[in-house]
Length: 494
Image (cartoon, rainbow, N blue to C red; front, top):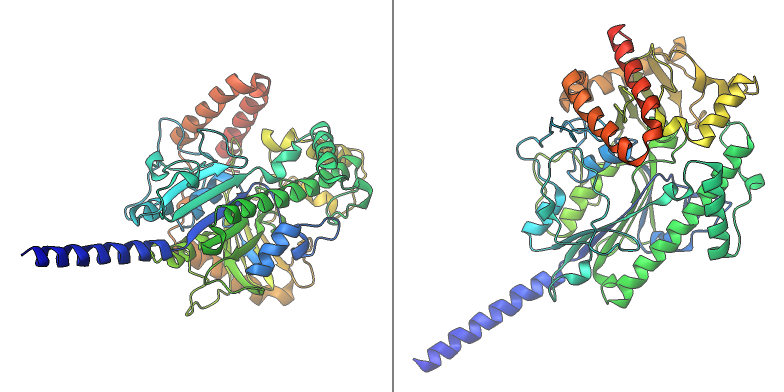
């Protein structure tokens, strides 16, 4: 009997060791998510600065040249990639919504990715960098979620041998602030860190921006935030290597949308939706460049697959690293209310064409929005327009109304400044792109087709105003005036 007991204990120990070994073999997954930054890294062709750490990550892994967010603002983008769903499919499409008395709940069967990792035995963390003691990193989801889906803010606190899923949030382009003064302060910081700052005179702007001093200073400081972001990536990789985790860790590097600028953040031009995406680690091809169209929500299923976790059948995103993956021929994006500014735009982009549908064409391109209007770059643009110093292309930003449809040939017009929607020779292309977008809206059950109720709008605005009362009461009159303007336009059918 004693020999049998010893034998059984031995078998149990071997089984436990085998199970533990399987758990140890599962890769760690690290997402590095950067705020407000386009693909201005040297491995993406940026010439004014060098980004050695992101470049090294790209050489060690796979770089995607045509990655696009499904929402060009942080909270809706995060609501999408944390679920692997279009934000429009889950009712999380309005920026920082559901924060008041009226709440937003995920549809049945939709589960945030950290919960799936946690249930599979992973330690889940979310942090800023450098890590702030006791505080989680940026979440900003537009739905009710359980904070318990994160075990903490430092993967180093996991159990010995436990794999981890970690999100690291970095401020990116936000570091330069919104004024010339704050941009100058950050440039001075960059000069101290790197021994030099990016020169404003060397900056090359897109043709839709004038070479105003404020814009050049801002863009130079922005490029320095890219350098700082690259430095942080180097620190993260160094820690993984020091802890002995790097060889068994998949690192996903991405930004939450493009640069915060007039035609960038909050808008569906490529400046707002095109982002860098680099993935490196076990089972990821090294030194590879992919030029097919991918969406930022795809990081959810590919991460689950790499960890051996089943991908939920309802998930709309795709495992773009799967052996049987069939490349997309189009990607989709949506813009809805941001803060107090009511908006409704949708786009479909192929490798050659971009189609944008403006559902509120009677409103100006630059609707009143306190967040953007108080940036020095917007103030400078408005001043230049008022003083008649903008050319025909640069004046497009200030049109009092917009076309209901925009169509751009991205091969001949990468800056999206020549709208072909009314050109007879593009009539068939316009119809094809229009139909493709309409089919996507219907097939994904786009919640944005129903206007936001006044009750929900008022609920969110009350939270917004209450926050301003504590943090920036001087802005209250401007925000309240903008809210009245939104309601006035809605009443007028605009």
